[in-house]
Image 1 (spheres, rainbow, N blue to C red):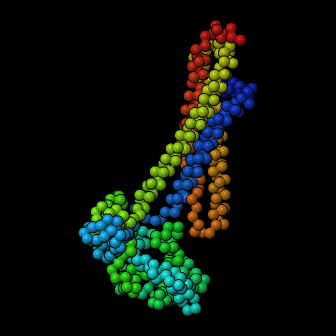
Image 2 (tube, rainbow, N blue to C red; image 1 turned 30 degrees about the horizontal axis):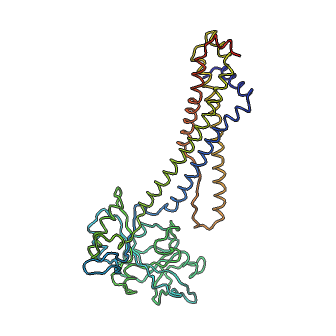
Length: 426
């Protein structure tokens, strides 16, 4: 490996056949280049999608009421029903594996015309009722004031927190809204905070920027919702599968509302954990396909290298015969052929790795510049195209193995050359 004469011979052989060497190496170069670019692009898609869930509780799910689709205990199919406070209490009591449960009210009927007024300013915004626990599912920061708290729920205070868009429309820039009042559907509520979602691209029920959140109990009482719950979210304790909790919640709800055990459509839901797992499996399949295509292309390049090495062995038949005649051991001949094959493959592969990494870096720079000019909350589904250190190490190992295998057959053929026959070879 460290024989200076051997390396001089390898370099001389490459210089004498520059065009052939370049064409031979190009197959390996292109295979590694495409493998790096495709893997980096796949990682960019994963980064873009997971970035949208960066602070959202991934061990969560949401459930709501739908029309029944099966007649049961005297009730016709197509019956409207709704969740209620008793459902929430029963779920918490019977399923201790739940970490956080937060019911919500959605004021579909409250957004009619310009339903929010402050002085001479009026606009139309969504109205929802929440518990403080919802912040554990969908975290947010508070540029002004505070979030809804336990006392707001217990005392049914007429307070609210508002989204960024509500603040921009109803208040002057830089004005502190805390302690000011908004008239929401004819009822005055004191603003106690402005929230900024950590996950602005995830909207459950409404656009968070354009929503006013009231304490859940206040909204039930003020707007005559009784004990209705429109939907609820929950998180599972560490190590507990979310779907297993969903499967235990549904029978409780069906029993309370006389819904058929066979009616799978009466309770709607969205399992965040399951959706993310589906995304992970999808990208795992994509990555496997990328590696299959990349390695297949690399094997094609290795076949090209092997064929060229066979030609080189044929051209050097007389030279190899002389080496054998003066006492060169088979290991010396094999090492010479393998060294040339591994050197050619490794250099081409490193160039492909470097070029692919450079393309990914330039793409990342361009994407960063585009994001800097885009609206701050615009979601990007392609972020930070990159390959990790394990990928780079794996590429190096694959290159050495491919170079070794590509030169193995020509090397074994060279060893089988008989010195007498080689000396007579023309």
